Image (cartoon, rainbow, N blue to C red; front, side, top):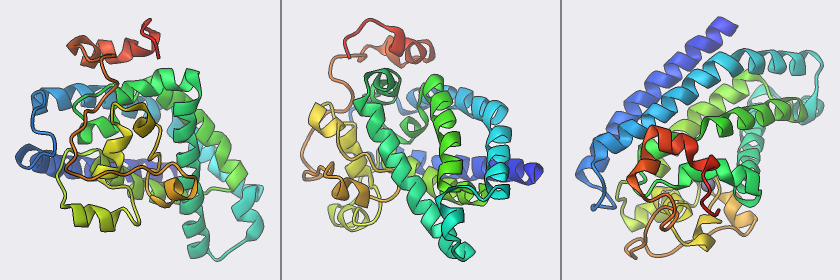
Length: 267
Ligand SMILES: [Zn+2]
């Protein structure tokens, strides 16, 4: 089963790489923000950080997550095991519950000062594109995984649930971070269900009230339900990032990104 899980992880990585290349090409020819730093070097810097995170997750967490899922199943722990639905309904409910957890966790990353210190590495990117969707501080990856592990027995999550959710989540994350220009009507229809580039772009706006909104990952309903939904016309100009904080080039190099949480800039 572990071998199967690692094979699934490899397939997932290949799928993500293929989708990333497609989005990179579209961003290159029809970008939403046109005046930006060079696309390829910017993306490579973010992908270097993503590479560290993939290594970290693979080496430290895959085996632990698999064992916790097995233990949860053997002991029939958590909500999903208690209500005992047919497998397909159990999977659908698991996807909804994991996505709700993602919403809550993302919101906490903005509301708890310690968590924000690390999460701002993701938000300091003034030239958001698909590569930004993979730009997280490794310490955020570590504690997010630890928290996620503790959620598995609470919700009764199985390994298959996590795999299917990630196969759904990762392409959507790349898509909604991408610097592609969608027709307003298409963006509007898509965001009835999921998080679109324009919806998530506002989450990366340099206006604080917009940064603290649109937290959803897969299903946009959470922001509407918990009153954190923000929208404005797609053509209205705005800036990305954290204003003047961390706007210098050095903060967007690998060493700079790793040291942002330990710098003395006011958060
Ligand atoms: Zn955020």
